[in-house]
Length: 243
Image (cartoon, rainbow, N blue to C red):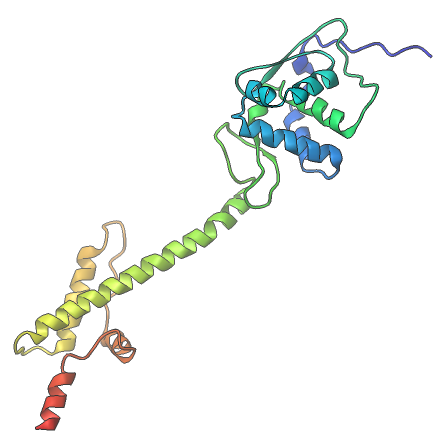
């Protein structure tokens, strides 16, 4: 049996076609020992900056293992990429494949790709790895995951905004009641309070928002019944009954 000739890497990027990043992402999202080791390498790589020199200095055994798996002159850069300097003895044929060696080989070839820093993940929602469209860090793999992440905060923001607006209306109503009670008025207290609160709402509303809906006597009655507001004539009625 003739011995297989080693593969010489004249151009390391010839091994990495348009689908190279996608293939690497698929491996990361698979199960098995090789994929687990690959995910571990990817996490450490991203945590380093990515900075391959920093990653290798932190784990010299890893750097040695990648060089052995690649069988070439694998040179880490001070940013996300690596370079493979070809030699006459360089080969991609590993005589003793193991999951760890296979993972190191896959990772070593991956960082040769000029767009390796487009690797995104793991997604904050589903935990999957993915290919980013830009080099700007993306936390979510799809719009669906992004919407799931932002939905609770958006709901809470709306809830907080409504609660703050309600508290503000109650304060305006209390101020109007105090002003109405300060001296005798010909105008009834309900119309006085509603006119003041509705006026303040219009002033407080932002220009880009629609004009707020005017409050009615039903609004006053509701919050008087649940003790958030108090009828300013109640004390006068009690005094009149005692007499």
